[in-house]
Amino acid sequence: MERTVPRPASEEIELYLRTVYSLVRASSEIRLRSLEEAHAGMNSLLHLQARGDESDMSAFIYAVLRLPPVMEEVERVVLGQTPAMYAQRGFGDITAWACVDAAARRRRCYYDGKGTLACLLVSRSDIEDLLPILTAYQIEWNKLHRRLNGAAANGNGLAAALGLPDEDLARLRAIWKERFEPMLERIRQHKCDLRIQLLSGSLTDYRRAMHGWWERIQRACPDLAERPVYFISSNAHSLVNIASGFALRRETELSGFLDNVIDPALRQEWEDIQAEVVPSSRENFFYYVLKKYMNTPQGRPLKAERAELERRNGITRIASDAAFETEAQVFDLARLDPEAVDPRLGLAGTGFLKDSRAAIINIDYPLGMAAYHVLAEIAEQVGELRGVYMMGKAATLNGVVGDVMLPDVVYDGQSGNTYLFENCLRAEDVAPHLVYGSVLDAQKAVSVRGTFLENHDYMDVFYREGYTDIEMEAGPYLSAIYELVRPKRYPLNEIVDLHNLPFELGVLHYASDKPLSKGRNLGVANLSYFGMDPTYAGSIAILRHIFAHERQLQAQATP
Image (cartoon, rainbow, N blue to C red; front, side, top):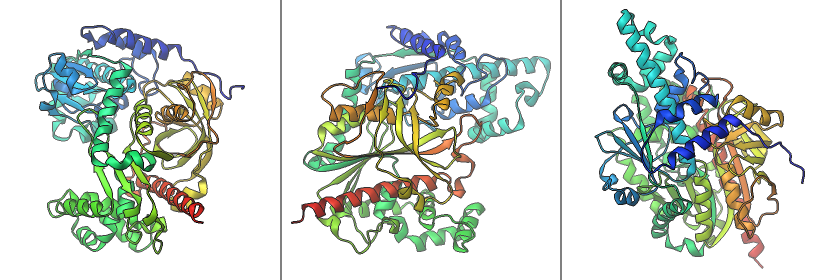
């Protein structure tokens, strides 16, 4: 079959990856500075000023948000798959160290308080994500180090020293808050010279770590091996809010909280919704407020009440384990309360779910190739797979932040395959529940290997061929699906037709940023629901699809 897109090639990116894997194969520590030249040579879209003397504050802030807040103390980063692996290599029980989380990346990390950071890997994507982030962090830290010391010698002030716009300084101050001045002083005093060590990286180790994660789910819900399952990869909040209806039952209490809330923007948003000045969803707003309220002393008791309601309604949460930072949720469809769920699901007055044997497994969207390992493990363990649905953030080259994209072609940067498939989700499934954005169906997506592993030459190939939806997980998921329906491992560098699958397949991405327009991301206007709007619209569309499918199956089974 003729290819629909030329195989993209970037010699700079390929050189960088070869350099990465040649270095991490070493049995001893390596200095991160060994990667700096290849990193700068990539001309990454996320780090355009890597080679220059000018600070690239966008790249630095991106890295800061995706690394633990103890990075200024770290001298050595050790990478491995499981805590047991660290113990075998003489590090002891790393789970007894401080668990340190990044603000914008779910990756389990532990810090010993003495300069060593242990990061647990779930797939090779963690290597291809973490090392560029660390390298960008070190390059930009050292630029600031040189500038601050040069300014001190010349008697210049902070603004002149850093040579940064006020906006960039304000962003950094907002992230570090009271640590802003101490952090700048630490940067001035210390050069960053990180050392990296990879303990192992075999495919078997990744599979073993994933199997340990699944065993926690199986212990919590042992009957999944005999039940039909719908698998959803989305997030840890939207589906459970919609299916439990807990926030909507607490509308009076949450409204009272809004009357006394300190945040004037939040209170104004509620007044505008009541006055119908803005089209924001009332339900979405209360889901947002519930999270805020439960983080206050007066709202904290609601956590136990919510947990009890979820148990009664057949919703089981399985927290992430020591290795894999991904929460799972299992929904027993027969135990859901049709009268309590989000009214947009249209279940009120119906009772067909009580006869369903099916369950939903929902997980927090993983990173890159972890998606392949997750779905391969689940498909091997459950009784029957009735549907696979993916919902996650993506960059867009043709839409705006908040738009929803429904692809039916995905180029996978991991395998080199172009996957063609029927997306069961349609624009009419999502559009009625989307307030602010647009729904773009019949899209073409590309699953890149890493956020830093993109440059203009690489992306230009896709843009000219109409690929405008950029993310990291759909391709690996589709590689796992290939192995569910074919008697061999997924191929490489082929066009793969995945039409006529024996289960439903739905892929939905919502635009969180525009890589060619710096600074445009979902954080710009959270109270206008640019983030919640597409997330909940997509979640409702997926759940309505599952319920319709269950109703159809039951109707077919009735004599």
